Length: 249
Image (tube, rainbow, N blue to C red; front, side, top):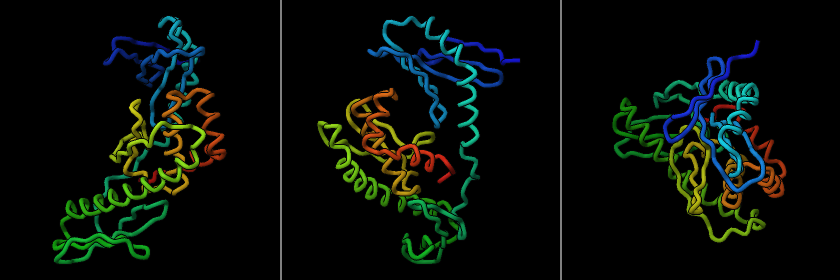
């Protein structure tokens, strides 16, 4: 027996809520000058609906209802891979990742605060080794410093690979913590990358950057977008699978 489907309107921001069994999936209809309706479930647990401007909301909602079983299946699949890692304590012995490799946290007593990667350890020096909050701040400051330098370098490399996009200018790069996305771009031509992306392998970082660079030319996830992505990065699917295969944080 199939699940009962209900689509409710009047949600915050003019959105909708699709109820399928016990699932509640929010979404908005994004009307664009396009010929086909595209329904896409993203790994960060987001339902995207891109619709032609000439279609009525009623017709689009009927189509979503017809695809509700597929949407629910995709949603549950990505839900299974959402991070479940317990909160970190920032104490010696914890494992932290950097560019895809694992390092052990080693906190030692020092009059001067410091953070340095050496061998298989991330060494954190501070006056009070029991002050885990201070350790966390030092670790995150170290990650931010290295993320900003690494992402800037990778963006420059990726721009060379993306000459076919003929971008008008070099995008402004911002680094910040993001809960559900590895990266995003704005219509103003800016790219934001998740600080935690510095934990993953370089080839996965490049995939996210090139994905966002393609979005600067093609805002949606249409077949045209994926053709452009594949021309620049033929193995993008393998990189995407690697990125989503485990919890890197």
